[in-house]
Length: 493
Image (tube, rainbow, N blue to C red; front, side, top):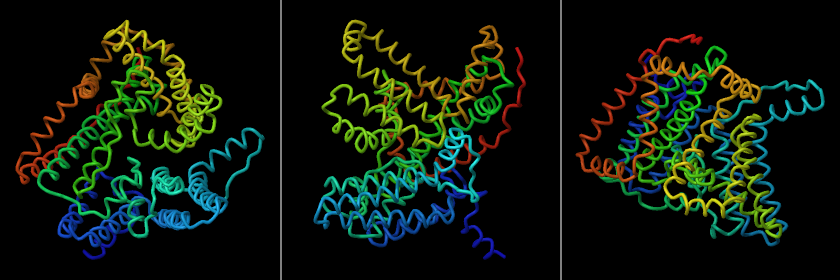
C-alpha cells in the first residue's frame, strides 16, 4: 500500500501539478537537493541529476508533453551541430528553416490552432471545427524561445562552437527553474555554466533562501491575497459590482499581476542559486518607469531582450534605409509579435499593439521630452512616472479579459456607474486588501539599497537559523493562504 502510494506520487496528475509554490514541490525538491549537495563538485553526476529532476519536474506538470520538449530540443541540437559544417549559405538557410518550422510550427499548432480557426470561421462564415482536442504544453512559449535563440546564435556565430554534449543541451532547454515562465536564459550565458564547478557555500545558500522568502511573500501574502479577496471576484463577475469596485480592481489587478510574476521569478532565481547557478531576474521596479520604453527595460526583461535581439534589431537593420519609418515599423511588428506570443486572444494582440504605439510615441517625441525634462526637473519626472503607471494600470485590464467585448463592457460599466462618493464605503469594506495594495506599491518605490542591506544582514545569519526562518515563513504563508477569504459582497450603490 505504501509503495503504491509512493509510486502514484511519481505519476503525472493533471489535478495536482507540482507547482513551485506547492508543498509537494518543496518536499520533493528537499529530497533531491539533499542528494544533489553530495555531488555538487562532480560535474557529470551533478548535471545528470539536474537533467533527471528537470525532466521529472516537467513530466509532473505536463505529462507526456515532456516528449515534445525532448523532440524539439533534439532537432535544434542536431541543427546547431550541422550549421557550421554546412558548406553553402543555402544549406544553412535550410537547416535554420527546419528549426523555425519545428519551433514556430509547434508553437502555432499547440497554442494558436483554435484562434486561427475562429478567425477563419468569423471571416468566411464557416463553422469548421476539429475532431481532436489540442492541449497546450505548459511553458512551450519559453522553452521554444530558449532553444530557437540558441540556433539563431549559432547561425549568427554569436556562439562559435555548438554544444557537443547532448545531455548538457537538453539540460539547458529543460532546466527546471526557468522552464515554466522564464526568465528566458540565453544559451551563451547558461550553457557554459554546466561545464564549470558550481560554488555553493553558506553565503550563497543564505542569499538564495532570502530571495525565495521574498518571492513567497510576494506570491502568497500579496498576489494571492489580493486575488482571493478583491481582484478575482471583480474580474470574474464585473456586472455585479459598481464603477468604484471596477476602478480599484484595475490597480489591484496590476499589483497582483506584478507580485505574482515577480514572486515566481524570485523563487526560481533563488532555486537556481541554491544549486550554484546564477540566472538573471526579470524585473527592476517597473512602476518607477518614466515612459513605456523605460517600462519594458524594467518589466519581463528577458522577454524584452529576446524580442529586441532576435526580432526588432534584424527588422530595423533590414529597414535601415527607411530611417525613422523603418524603426517605427520594426517596433510595431515586434510588439505585435509580443502580443501574439502572450496568448491566442485578440486582447493580447491589442495590448501588445498599444504598447508598441506608445513606444513609437516615445521615439517620435524624445527630443521634446528631453527639453521638458530639463525645464521641469523633478516635477516632470513625477508626472512622467504618474502617467506611465496609469497607462500600465488601465491597459493591463486587457490581460485579465477573456475577450475584447469583455474589456469594452468593463470600461463602459466603470465610466457609467463610477460614483466618487462611494469610495469611502469601498475603503470600509476592503480596508485590508487596500492596505496590501499600498504596502505593495510602497515596496516598489523603496530604494534598492534597502533590499541589499536586508539581504546582507540575512546572509550573515547562521545557516541553521536561516533554514528555520524559511520553514516558519513557509508555514505561516500557507496558513495565510488557507484563511477564509472575505465574503462575496453584492455591492449596489
